[in-house]
Length: 175
Image 1 (spheres, rainbow, N blue to C red):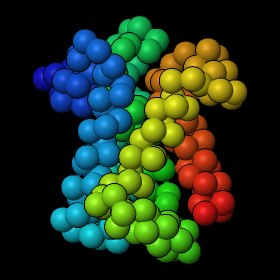
Image 2: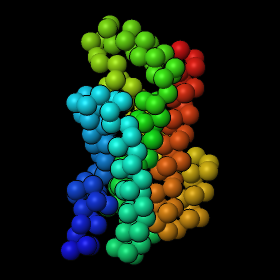
Image 3: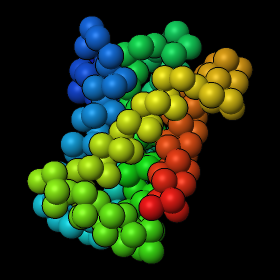
C-alpha cells in the first residue's frame, strides 16, 4: 500500500510512465497547477501553503526514492521536476518590486499579443527550468554525477530551479 502511494507521488500520478519526455510533461503540469491555483485563489493566498506542501513533498520523496526505487535515478521519478519547477514560479511571485516590473513589462507585451502576463511569465520560467535541467551546466552536472542517492535525484532539479530563477531576475533587470 505504501509503495503504491509512494509510486503515485514520485511519478506524479503516472506522468513518470509517459513514453516521451516525462520530465518535461511533469514540469508543464506543475506550471498548469500553479497557474490554476493562483488564478482561483490569487497568488498571495497560495504562496505559504504551496511552500509548506513543497517542503513536505521534498522530505517524503527523499525517503521514498531510496525505499521504492533501487536504481539511482529512475526515469519514472518526476516529483523532482515538480519541486524544481516550483522554485522559479514561487521566487518571482514573492518578490514585489520585481513582480511589479515584470507585470508592467508583460502587460505591455500581452496587450499586443492578447496573452495573459502571468501565463507568459510561467512559460518563460518553464523554458528556463527545462533548459537548465536538460543541459545540466556546472554544478548541476556535478551533483547529477556525484550524489547518487535520493537527495541527489532531487537536488539537481532544485539547483536547476535556482538557475532558472537567477536567469529570470537577470532578464527582469534588463527590462
